Image (cartoon, rainbow, N blue to C red; front, side, top):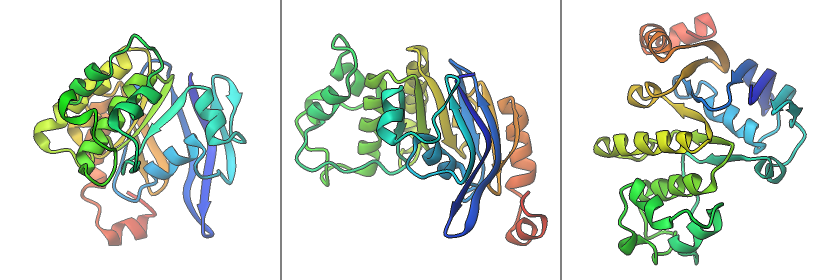
Amino acid sequence: MLLQLKNVEVERDGKKIVQFANIAVKKGEIHGLVGLNGAGKSTLAYAIMGIIPISSGSIIYRGEDISHLSITERARKGITMAWQEPARFEGITVRKYLEISRKKKEDSIEEALELVTLEPKKYLNRELGEGLSGGERKRIELAAVYLMRPELAILDEPDSGIDMMSIYDIIGLIKTINSKGSTVLMITHRDEMSEIADRNTLMCNGTPAITDTPIKVSRIFREMCRNCDEHDFEKKGGC
């Protein structure tokens, strides 16, 4: 296994956001993390990246406990993350951002933009700031992940802010990132995205409920979680 979470718990403001998290991600796979908004998916992703600390348990990466390591140290070990809401970088061009991200000089930054259906001539010299829409910044960030060639790419809702016509372009890019050697941990609640995973883990009320094939997890998600109203959620402690 490339990544293992063992009884991971995350607390914020005295409340357990994630608990009893036991997940194994195989090297080379696309692993989906699915569930309703507020199920703890993004919190768990931030904990893996080291953005927020875990309160107990351990995060094992390539056989090493990295729970105590900083974001920078985890990045040096080959872990990167694409945010649900990409950061704005004033004063830096798209070209410079992609050049900084590029791990292999032979990789083309123009090709990376084309993979996310952005025309290089229109974007390379633009600033990566307020002048770009959220969807454009999302695509550019995914192009940067492609160029980084990480061992583990954590993608937090890569379809967020992307119109339906472009979802399949993003799906194609994720498959390409994976085919270039990156293991992908993808957070999503959209069927079109979760279907491309090798395996999916369903998060419910901060706890991984099941890990199985996309078909089986999607069925359980559809039959249980999407039909779960707030009253049932509180009464059952999850769905």
